[in-house]
Length: 319
Image 1 (cartoon, rainbow, N blue to C red):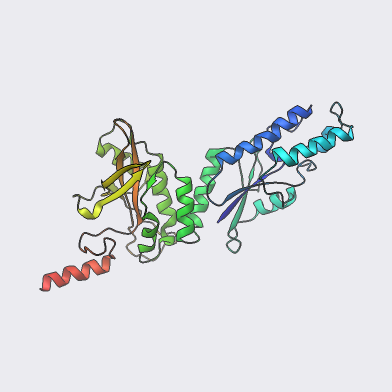
Image 2: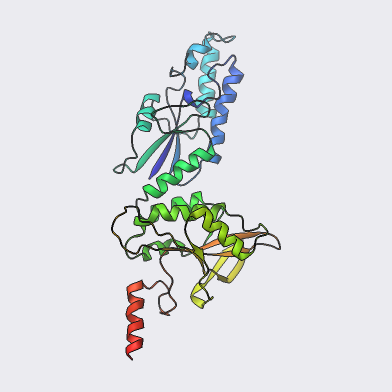
C-alpha cells in the first residue's frame, strides 16, 4: 500500500510572506521532510500549482506582487527556476492541489494500493486525511500497515522500514508465510505488538520480569518466556558486524485478535524476540519470528503447525 504525502499551500508554516528570502526558506523546508518520512512505499507529492492555489487567502503568485521587485519578470523567472531546480527537486509533481485534496478525501484504494494524506502543520483540515507532525503521521502509517497489509511481503518491508529500533533475523520475513490461516488476517494485532517492542527501551534498569511486563502493558497482549530455552529458540543474528550465534529468543507476545471478528477460532499467534547486549549498558530487541508458533517437537521444522504437533504427540503415545 503506497502512501502519498500531499503538499500545497496548506503545508506552509505561515500563509503570508513579505520577501523572496522568506518564501525560499519556506520551500527549502520541504526538502527536510524526506528524512522524516522515508518509510517504504511513502512518497511526497508537491502540487504542480502550489504557487497558484488560494485555499488559504492570497496565492503565492498574488503575494509576489507586493514584494520589492515583485513585478520584475526577471526576478519572478529566477524564483521559478530556483523552486524547480533546487527546492522542489525529487518530489512527485504530477498532481494539482485539487487532485491531492480529492485523493485525501477518499478511503485507501485497494485496487490502486494507494492512500493519500495531506501535510498540514498549522491548520486543521476537516474532511481530509491530514497530519501535522511525525507522531501523527506514524499513527496514520501504522493504521494503514495494520488494516491494509496487502500481502506478507508488502507488510514485512513496510513494518521493517517503520519499526527501526528493532533488529530482524535474516529469515524473519519467511516466518510470516508459516501462519497456517494467513498472516494478513492478524496484521492489526501484530502491528500493535511490533509497535510495543519498537517503543520499549531494554537499556532501562529493569529486571527481565519488568521488561516483559512493560511490553505486555504497551501491546495489551500477554508477553511471556517459553519456560525453557530449547535449541529451537536459539537464533543467529549479526548486528553491525558483531555475531550473536545463539541468541535466546524464547520470549514472545501472543497477539490473539483476528482482523475480522466472529469466527470463534483459537487465534493466538506469536511474535518471538530476544535481547541483544550491544555493549555493557545498551541493549536492543531482536525479532526472530512474526506469526507462527515455534515447536520443539519436530527437529526438521521449528514452525510445524499446531495440528501436526498434536498428531505427533498422539503417535508417540500410541507407540
